[in-house]
Image (tube, rainbow over all chains, first blue to last red; front, side, top):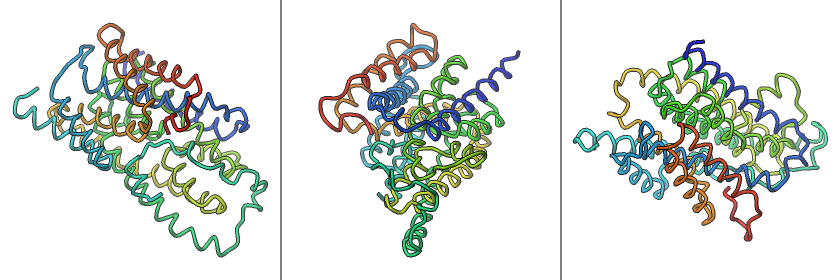
Length: 107
Length: 268
């Protein structure tokens, strides 16, 4: 199969798995999922995945560690988050920071 | 909880904070019917809240649409992700792994791991929504996300119809707007040339940071998140793309295995 078809396979698989995960919560008896350890693991896995995705997206390119204008963009995002800016504002400020720095020729 | 708070923390995990929502009180659908006065008193504000959360959440699908196209997916694939996966964190993760050159299995796995919390939302919502069967159950599952759960559980515990309305109005509202705005973002993304010129790579990083931010309330969560980030970065030059992210999931499993010594240390 072509690479294009494989992307579709992955999308449909991810969609199906996402839906089955959601469905499971609605149909399983409560006592099975009320295990505190399962709850803790789910909470921490969410934190570690999102944090790792942020770090890899901010500080790597093509399998290499990279320091470029994204560092400044992340610093701006942190300030915006501390000031309780809405999601879209945080994202837009980070993009604008990187875009302006690149326009000036700084990575 | 105001709707503005929810809008600024779209992916916050509310299920753990929620009280057991009327568990035991609701044995049959009839028992869930409240006095008419209580119905009239809450449904207006509930709908307003659902609508404002839907608009705030739907709006940021524009960044998903643009990032997905920047990652190399086409318009139809981008739309399919929003329709089928329909969970912001999972969708950003899928295109993030693809953009980083990771293989597709890693993308689907990361997306699925990030969607595990939605399974717990179904459990929290069960006392409000059960019994359900057939298409209604299938559709309820699809719109079980951070926002619909948050608005449902933010209504008074005794007002089951308001909680139910909060779930459905927010779930369907976000679904409609999220999918429409995804198209707008993807079409915009196709017309802008090199995504890096517009800082879209930085936007993706900031999006993940904004999603994790509300969950970093405790010192222990900071440490765990820091370890995950450092491990993922350290593995990036030596492991295939996507693997560093999944290694971070292992950090989460280890961190959650043992019970914390103090209350409030588990991220919310």
